[in-house]
Image (cartoon, rainbow, N blue to C red; front, side, top):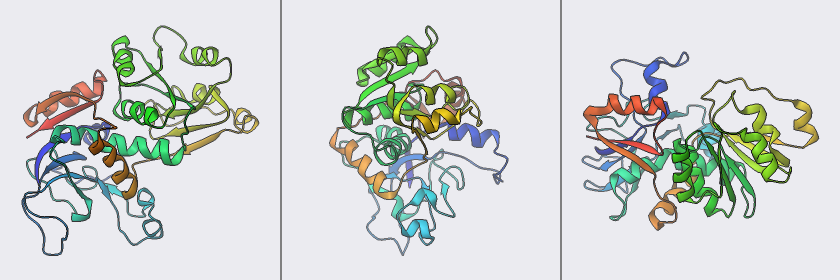
Length: 311
């Protein structure tokens, strides 16, 4: 593929800085969110032709283990991600499996498609599949400026939920409100957990979407309503959160882990993009040569939505 756009994720920063369990061969380049044009097709590839505009499912799977055969791609025994376990899209060209490309309709731009893929497939699996979000439920999203969190706002509204968001930035809260957020809390100005508890009449919320980790974990469990679900896909502030087991069993809470998405979930959420019912959130677009500056901004957390690089 000729890469036309590739969005950044925190994964790019983690791989750049080095993961203890991952032996990354050098030179290496990351980039999981890819959209572009097919320029060459292998002899065994079907359903794809030269000139196709496509988006890429970044999952790498074996298609043979018990989990793949069940359709649970993220649980694959050999699971990997383009840009982490194989050279990614922060380049002019990238090689991908023909099964992983999805044709882009003409009305969908490359930059928007790249910005949409990973965060929306992740948030879709978290909320629709894992947490089974239902109409009328209260959904709390922590740190709404991040990619998964901002994507979850649109998915939450599509599911008919009342969406709560937190941020330390009033500007980010206003942008979240424009996406459909119903309740906004600036945690730099007030105790977010106490605010949620009071505003819900001491009931709590049905679902907390967590990717902060240690810094928020204890309070995320505390603000759940009875029978509530905490779904998590990350731990940016640290991997070890405090859990009061008494709260867990007495309130009959559920803690659910989630990562990436199945092929079906990828196709389901991309269909919503094509229909226009979900939209990408693009903060800024950079030329590929300014990738270091884009990664610096991502590390500082000043963006709302996605930073996209264009070769």
